[in-house]
Image 1 (cartoon, one colour):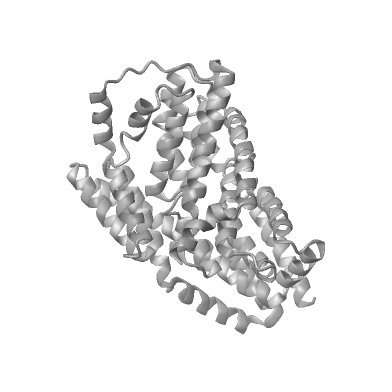
Image 2: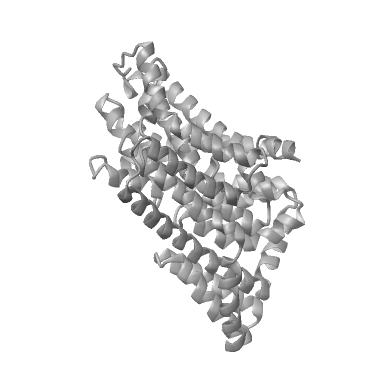
Length: 435
């Protein structure tokens, strides 16, 4: 077999094993090792397997991953996110579908502290969904809202997916964080607009909640949520002002989250132990997949598969928009079956040569990729965020109902994605200001 044939055969094996639900990080490691062994011999494969993990993990920028994860878990377990939904439902009580809009807003703010879509959905599903169901909301609307708004954890900085993408694409993490701010706000606004329009057209979907609140009640509710905006401002403000690098901001954020939890008398050894454990597990998962993807990238480079695919796609059309649309189709299809970080790290080595040949801005493309991955998180049949909601509700709402509710948000995401592709300035305006 030629090198190119080995490369395509190995890619097919990877996709087949992932379809069987094998761990993607292990699959990439083993297939890459076996492919290099078949092509160049055992000694070369062993040399690559020894060198790449150390060189990759030693990347200083990756230290931001455990720090931001720790910050999110401390903020969640330490009570810094408590009261978000309660405060927003008071503020938005007169808006059609106010509880749904409050759920979207709470998810957006929680996302700015957690950096994880699944964590955001899990946290808000236990708070917002039961409240909406209690008030008579349509089950599909209530569950679909939180499943979909939870995906904002990937797009609103700080985001773990953004950090991993920035390292692989060799772009500035700080600029990518800046680029995600407006698209994240746009996504949240589009979700709220869609909810309000649907409820306005069909009020039975979301009966007006019986919420009475005085000015004193509103002020008291806002006092309960001040720690989270303070944490977000301290971390993102430091990055955007150029005072801290994203890596330093992760450490500052984790420390600040502990200080704020302590001020609220919610910082216990149990909270710290649980947060550290969950952050370690999350970091290990990301690193195993990332190391496997790095080996797969090296292997693909040796076989010439990325160059062959790039040439084939360029023969169809070399317009950046046409290429982005073709890539979007690939991501949407893969998003039905593979989790987000696996898709990104599996495909980037293949698409990078194509994008570089077309002079595509990699910051802009990063935002497009993350938006596509968000859509995959709620797309049947795998859609992990939908299963998180179903699990949190202990089967009281069928998973088919959750997916049915998410379909409206997928359609809304498609409109948002069209805007991001048509107007790159939405993503690039803030990073360009930094220049």
